[in-house]
Image 1 (tube, helix red, strand yellow):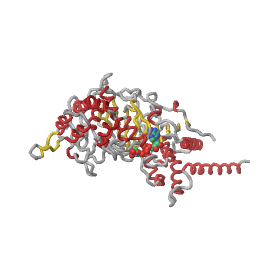
Image 2 (tube, helix red, strand yellow):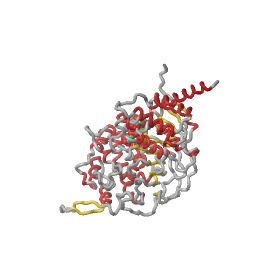
Image 3 (cartoon, protein in one colour):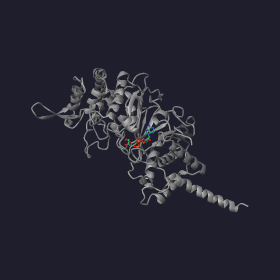
Image 4 (cartoon, protein in one colour):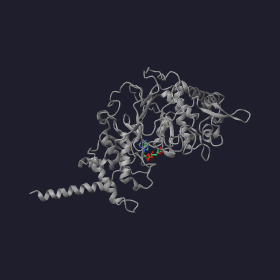
Length: 534
Ligand code: AR6
């Protein structure tokens, strides 16, 4: 027997659509009611685009991010005589951050000045451990002498860099935000200093309960013995990003689009056949999905545990491309018919390992070219799978439909002609932390891709057998000419026959069932043919 360590099968990647080659020409960049552009859309080469409007315009209301620099942002402070009095919080933030910050202890003290409500609750041992145990003294000194003052300056430029309150990307509303990388950097500097108001309360009824966390306080939290290894590596990613942008500010732009679809396919009626596939046991979505629609195996709270303990596909992606983290500021949790598309986020770091073995592996120079709006040609779509604690549940028709719909929303290409749609770069979506079955999910993703008219590249993350199985199933389905609707029925029947009993696992796998079901009918037709053929 052959011991194969890598398997690549199906259509060659070079034959599939990738950007920039396949991209349709973009219209001129122009904001409208459903697309807020935070800068003047005249890109001047080599400079950050100029913020729009010219002077700060606030919106302290339920449709916008409550900005740290808003006049409405008030905070109770002791007036010296034991009385509490409301004070402009932005002034307090400025005053505090412009003071001496020469160590992580000073930084903690500063952050707690304008977050005094949390002075007994927030824990900065992770941050302290990072500066005392993880990096060496000269690096720490460099950070407090150079990078930190630069970050303070950047954060405090907020009303001059982000000259309007950002819109919230709310549930069931199609809405996009295009902003400059400089604006993102400024917002992330504010997140680092934990300046965003109303974002720390943890109660279920709190104003932003349906939004992810954005202030970085979770990242600073300690573990059993000071800094947790995962957090240390995450901090290295973040610090590398801050080091990079304070040394040379990137001048491009990024778009975040929340997409909602109301008309979802009738899966039982879909007559499309599966698209082309390439399966490979080696490579990753971010390294090898160049120019494709790259899938983020997301949490419905975008970014999942990126600022906390989580360290799997989504969190790692957000750590090497920290601009993605800013989506957490304005993206409400995703419903079943929604996704978030992030176009133009740059990659800043390399990494090795995964989960507990995750390590920052130095700086990464992203040479991807840019489109006419100034965005790097990297398109990532966040789709959240369902977490299955009982493996049989995922075969229920309602669940299959939910995952088909979700994948379809993610792969949907608006009104773009299929020849302009890039192939999808995906893999074991929903099959790690969320415990789904990769063979079922591969089929679901292929069905959704078929209706969305896109080819698909499937990275099995070193699983040689899986790369072969998916490829063989795809060949079998193509050879039999089975449509998406027929596959839908096959999965439904598989569930009825094999997943409704008490047994924990089915006696047949889905792929065995599909094989048998159509092979049997093939051979019976074959026999009929024999009997009627003279
Ligand atoms: N490229 C290709 N495949 C990968 C990569 C990669 N870079 N990284 C991992 N895989 P998981 P989920 C494969 O567990 O189950 C996060 O906390 C690998 O086989 O990240 O959808 C989110 O915020 C891995 O086991 O995705 C959600 O809360 C599999 O993809 C939750 O996890 C699944 O990766 C989502 O969990």
